[in-house]
Length: 232
Length: 344
Image (cartoon, rainbow over all chains, first blue to last red; front, side, top):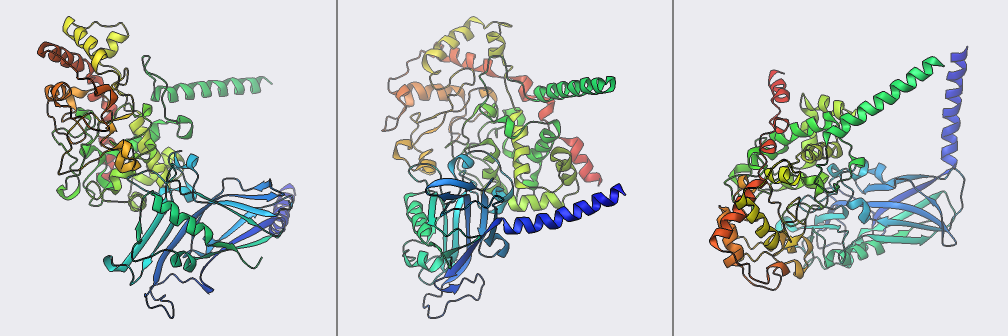
């Protein structure tokens, strides 16, 4: 009998727990776009009316330290908040943040990239594991943002361009902190417009950034500005 | 109640016993400062060290499964590559720097000649990915280790998880490297008042303290910093040292001050291995300094030594050799692990 009660209790807790977490969490979605269109990362993804034969093969970034503020004061923050967002992995585009107490907020704040303390803390697991391809080898440090593809504008091998933005030390600290005023809603859609990034980079001149530099800081700022809150 | 007490005392005993085993895996030598490495984030266990030792000696870390860490870091030469001025890697390729000797790494704040590596855990990634050294990547290494017939078991024994990760692979290698402590040279026994210098060594020590110790600081014989030591640039390598990592012009031609422990066995010397003999090194400091913008302040004033004094300094440097380190069986190739691989 005791066993049966325990099983029932476990079942009940499970069902109840699930409903509970659904109503008391914030669904944070990242929507990569190319202008108004959905972003496609595949070999056939040439964009119409594009004479440069632009093709994107990788769009990845770290979103970390997600915080919610109310009247400028921190009211909610995600624990162990390190997310690897990969445009080719649908699951990585959805982040669920626990808000058990239904705390209300009016501002979203997060980092694009990995903070300097984490950069110097040694080997990490999960999303921060160096096997995720977002860590430099010859020079220690996380890659905050990765954008790779091809364009006829690039007079490089196979017309490739590669932007691996990172660097945690001054003067080339690439970490960007983003803040958005938002409605107190359990759904947040954050859009990343890759077209906006590429419109601000002259691919004929700038097509290869793979270490911390002043140029990496500049492009990191361009990337940060390409994030907007969408259909909120 | 009695049972509870017994259980409690047993538990206490177990904790104390466990602590002492853990402590014995890494002992801070009595004449050494506190280590820099944060052991609380990667606490040493015998199984993790043993796993790291296996990985250190296993060529599985390289693209062609032929080059291991030990290929360029052999124990008898204080874990550097004796007789190789520049690192000799995969497909007989030659790298562009002299492989550094590995010892007392728990006291180091940055790694490599240019300090580009910020943490011991991350050190192995650099040679693993270098196209002239192992030409692999950690993601593929983890894939190969997972498919191997001994490693999932070794990882389970070490980390309680047979699913291999980059984090665990790197932490295990770091654990083995942390155990590479050299602290039993004649110099150390003199410092601990267990032995005495000869009069020549003693004179060499006095001269060393006067002329060399500001950078090669005791007891680690490095100040863990970067200096331009006045070497004329090798025009074939064009190696600007730390500038490569920081892109700061004031770091041009600066290199990590290496430890002098076991220097007798870790030739050739300098970041590009240009000197084969200690006498050449001493002569460089007395007669070969090239003055330029970033030259170390310590070398602005010429070092003057008579030929007898040079010999005395070398006699002192030889007291930094530590045979108990160079031939310690706990750092040997772990044949007990690899013989199993062959059998399976």
